[in-house]
Length: 115
Image (tube, rainbow, N blue to C red; front, side, top):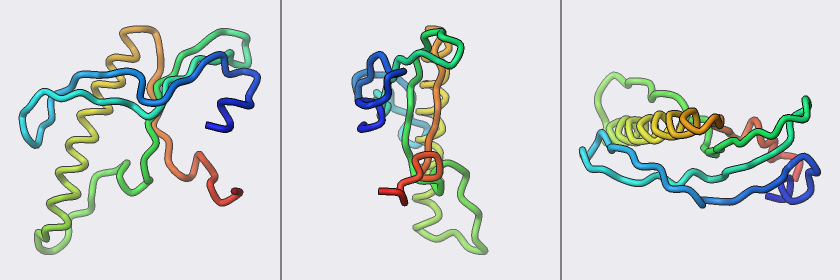
């Protein structure tokens, strides 16, 4: 957020301001997803772009590795992965339909160790 406030290329930004409908594959219910950020900025070519950004731990950004036996923890990770994947697909489609981009960021891109 500090980066968005202090970067001169950022035109506007907001946190959890847009609602994207999706179907949760775990429950089958229609739900709404509120991505972490929407950022409008001027890129290096001088063109204005809009990007929807979701911040997640890297571990949640890839499918869980199947253990030798199904544990409760693994089943919970599979359900989380399914729900998150559905959210991200819906966000990507939502962004593309508006000429925007969707980006998933982890602690690696944020480089949090420099705080």
